[in-house]
Length: 388
Ligand SMILES: *Cc1c(COP(=O)(O)O)cnc(C)c1O
Image 1: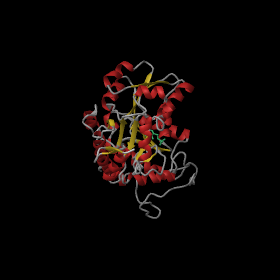
Image 2: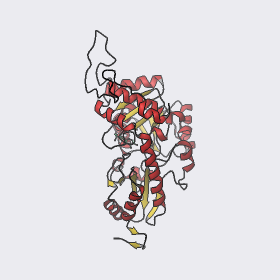
Image 3: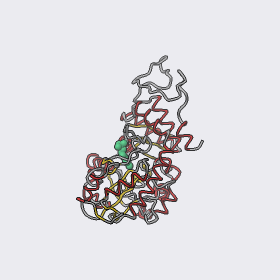
Image 4: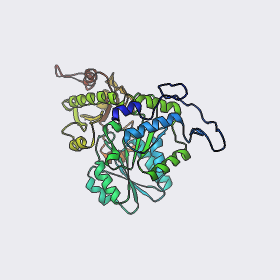
C-alpha cells in the first residue's frame, strides 16, 4: 500500500466486538486470563495494550521497519534507547541536537559514565577521524534544531556500519512522510510524536523503531522493564492525528516555502535557515535525502536581543511557544526557550546565537502568516517607514 493509504489503514481494523471503525481506547490496566498461561494476546498494559499495538503497527508500516514501540514522550523514547549502552561506551552526537537530548546525554555522562561527544557531523568524511575504540553509536538529528543543518544519513550509516556502530536517527522534524532513515541505513529511529505525527498539539508522545530482530527484542524488553509505554488514550489521539499526516504536511510544506522566501527577501533579516532555499549550504543533500524540505524555518535578525523581543511580542498569529509540528504556527527564541538547557557554551559551539528566531509553520492561510511576520518585523515595506 502507498504511504498515504497506510496512514489511514495500517494497523487498524474494525473492532471485532462491535465493528467500530475507529480503534477503541482499551483503557484497562489488566486483561483476564482464560486459563493458566492463556490470554487473548495481552496481560498487563505496561507490557502491551491493543490501542497501543494499533498505533505501533501503524508507525512500523509508515517507517518501513519491523518494530515500533509507542512511548510516553520523545524523551522517553530517547531515554529508553540510552539503556542499550553501559558505562564507558561512547556516543557521538550532532552538536546542534534537541536541547532535551543534550541535557539527557550530559546527565548520563555525569552520573553514569557514558562518554558523550557533541560534534559537527555535517561533513561525513570527518566521522572516520572521530570514532574511537569506545564508540558504540552515532546519534543524528537531521535537519537539526533550530539551525536546520543536515547530516548525510546514508554516508554516516555506512561509516558507522563499517566500525560496527549503531546509527540512531531522531526523525521528528520531518516525519516518515518526508524522510525514511531505515532506507538509508539507520538502525534505530526515534520520534517525538508530539510534533508532526500527532500534529494537533494536544498530546505528548514518542516512538522508537528498529529493523533488526536482536534490537527489536532488546528495545521491547526495555520499554516493558522501564515502563515507558504510552497510555491508551494518548495512543488513540496520535493514531487519529496520523490519519491526516499527508494532507497536513502538504499544507505545512507549501506555507514554509512561501515564508522562507518572504524572509529571505526581508530587509531586517540577516540570514534564513531553511533547506529548501537554494542558498542553503546543504540544499542538494536535502533534495536527495528528503522528500520535502520540512516546515521549520529559522532566521537570524539584524540587531540585538531587544529587537528579538519586539518581534516575539508583536506577532499575533504566531504564538510565542515552544514545540512544533502542530496545525497552528508558533514562534520561539531558542536561546531562552527550547535550547536554554543546552547552556551558553554548547549553544555558541553549535552556532545558535541569541538573535536566532525559530518558526514552526502551521497550516493557516500563508498570506495571513506573511502579513503577521511582516508587521512584526517592524517595517512597512509599502512606504519604507520603520514602525516602532
Ligand atoms: C520535541 C522533541 C523531542 C522531545 O520530545 P517530547 O515529546 O517533548 O519528549 C526530541 N527530539 C526532537 C527533535 C524534538 O523536537
